[in-house]
Length: 213
Length: 333
Image (tube, rainbow over all chains, first blue to last red; front, side, top):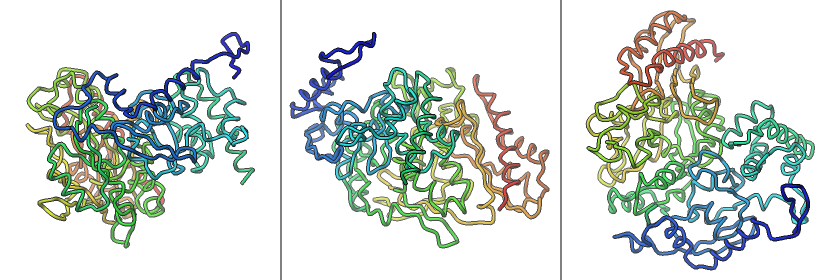
């Protein structure tokens, strides 16, 4: 895989993303994902009176049209399940409190915050992440292409959430004007303040969609 | 976050029995936007979560109207209500409070029943390191002498000045809504929305009159000659995706410019959803103009008790109410 480094030169080496993805799939091999989480939080694996509450539970999530059967702690958020158990690290953890929108994914076509939902609650629903937007042949979704065309990011950390939110924003019919885009995208913060370019990208993608319709 | 057991309920009565049997350590979860947040913070520590999203949607996620009232299932999502033709065309105040709340992602998740019970955003409540009578009864109130710019100026007590954060509740209290509930002991009952929330008094940790395990199943809003001419003005630190500093909900029944009836509620300034009957009394039977609106606003805040950091809410709140009244007056209905 070729990557651009800070100087813009291509290099074919292991990236931080590949490393993290490998680490995540390693974690998924551990049957009790929540055990990892509780160890990180410095909590005992089971608090008094919660013996049955601490047991791992099996859940099957449909993510990007593929079923994934996971054994997880009930406390695992959808976000943590996607990243740590399935290895789909495109969805980002920002604030963890529903205040930034970085973790936005689609559930049954609606945009939601994956940090504010427990994974167990999403059984039986169709989950779409940023990894599921492009076509199987690699052709980018018009919104992804629009973000590239308009340079609608700086650091890029909020971008997967911005794009997932933007796709839903257009689909909902809330991208008719720049003001409407700003209002309906207000749940996605960008600390680099790439907002003008994000709005421009969404306006472009909305036109593509309406010309296709 | 502490461990919890997770159960799905497909029957409302069964869900109520399950939560009631487990006691106060059991909680319902629907959208989860409030529950997961406060569980992550360690403020709420349920040992059992009963997931009510699988209750029959045809019953509890439905919006209907027979012309005399709007009936909202408690599992209706905020975004579902804001886009519903009945709400958009006949209850603009409800639509406004929903559209101006949170973000679209959160509105896609949050249920109406959970929304009206959302917890305060008081930072001293949210952070377990501080004294808070609401989170830990008897520990004190750090907000009284702390940073209280966001806090309430109406309905406060010596024990608690935490603001009720929601928007929809202001529409519901203004429009004389009621909630239908199921309780293990009380069975099915109807509670006037105005009686649902309790003033903090000396027991700020008891926020509603609901019994342990009692579940809100429906919200009913009567139609009246004031529902069409209704308006919500919300003032915030940023233009969107922010809780109210002050907010005014108004519904007017006008004949010409004479006020036949007025319904007024205030958000962001009180410890509970706040109906201002004092302001309504000023308006009733009079000709609505800006000076009369200002008199009503004076009456609405006559008993306000600001702290060290939130006296600004009085003049800003008055202006929000004046604006809401005049904008409602100019609506074409």
